Length: 70
Image (cartoon, rainbow, N blue to C red; front, side, top):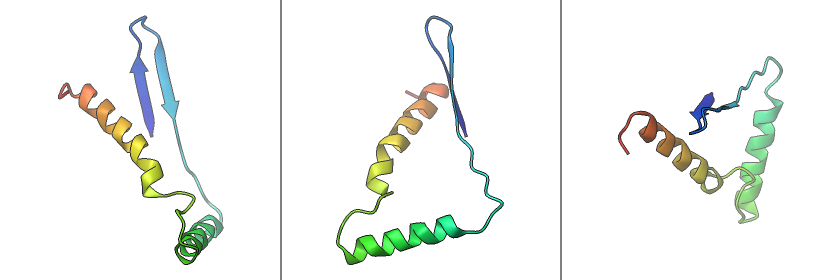
């Protein structure tokens, strides 16, 4: 995924993210264990939807600006 912006000065800003995993699924197992543990301990998990919402809101605003709908 890549987000690219052009500043008023003409500078180009790029945020580039990638995920490649050719190895075992150990990371998913750890994520699942953390999720179950958070339910048992009645706490928010380390990577919750609530923590990700601000990022998705920003992404949506950028999309709207890109398509001129905002």
